[in-house]
Structures are given as structure tokens and as C-alpha cells.
Image (cartoon, rainbow over the protein chains, first blue to last red):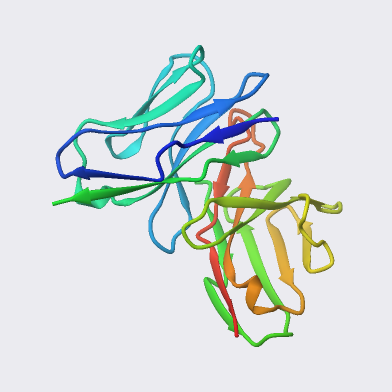
Length: 112
Length: 118
């Protein structure tokens, strides 16, 4: 079975500073990896996904993530955050044609 | 493209009543839809997988007689919370799988339905 671990429940960061949200996964087979963002009282929006190919994946809103198979990680990064990035971020894993398993989420707090 | 809608966006009901939530894929056909539940400040927990024309597959611990799922068409799945109680109050989110070639079976999420049971 697959699982996802987001080590940080909350990450505070100053505006315009860089940020990294950590995600590790566990799976015995090849997986698809995702990062979703959820703004208050809203559904999920896909930030980026890794399906295959290049390990560096670029997404929307200036976010990127790097798939590291040896470390079973898929950390999310942004070089300079904005107040509008305040949200909950979920890392997720899926095996082809199977359900998506979500991590517990990381709340990103942008400090002025 | 790939838009998923949910209706209603929020609902308040009395304890003991039933509530139906609709999930629609607006611009693609979804043979599979998923229903999630999210408690405040927590992650999404998969409740069930809904396949068009067949019975839903429920996750362990989810009461299938309480959370009735119907997927009668390729664009509509419904979740009915029967005899709702205050502990059923939650944010319910659906997703629809895009099975078109090249879509990698990507799931698209609805905006969610906030249920409050008094």
C-alpha cells in the first residue's frame, strides 16, 4: 500500500522569502505524485504533478517540485512567496488507475 | 476544461433528516468518481469510489447504508447522507476521474459541500 508523510503541519515564512514544503512517500511500485492547494472553504486545486520523465516539475503560481526516487521524496518549493500563497498544501500519491492517498497537509503561513 | 461542480455548496439540516449532494463533471465523462470527507484542519479521507452503473466501493469504516452513493450517469454522482446527525457535519468533496486518452486518469476536484447538522 502507498502512504504519504508531510513532516511539517505548519510552516511560517516571511513574505518574499523562499519556502520548501516537505513530502515523503512510501510505495513498492511506481507512483504518480501530486501537490494540491486548498484555500479556506474551497476545494482542491492541482499545483503540479509528476507522472514520469523529468524529475523537476514546474507548476502554477511559481511552484516547483523535485521527484527524488532514492529518497522517496517530492518536496515543493517556491523561491519567493506572496501573502496570497497562504493556504493548506497537500501532497498526494496514486498508482495508475487507483485512488489518491493524501498526506495530512501543511499550512503555509506568510508573515508580513 | 475538466470542471467538476458540486451542489449545494453548503447545507444546514436538522438531525434525523437526509441530505443529497450532487457531483457533476461538466465537460468530460467520468466513469469513476470519488467522495471524500474532510474535518476541520484535517486531510481528505476517501469515503468511497463510485463507478458508473455499478455499486460503489466503500472504504473501511464507512457505513454504506448511511452514505448512499449513486452514479447513474457518466456525468453525475450523488451522495446521500441518511438520518444525518451532528457528527456527520463535515466538508464533503468529490472528484471525477478523466479517462480520456492522454489524461493519465487525472482526478479533478469539486469545490466541496459544507454540511452542518443541527
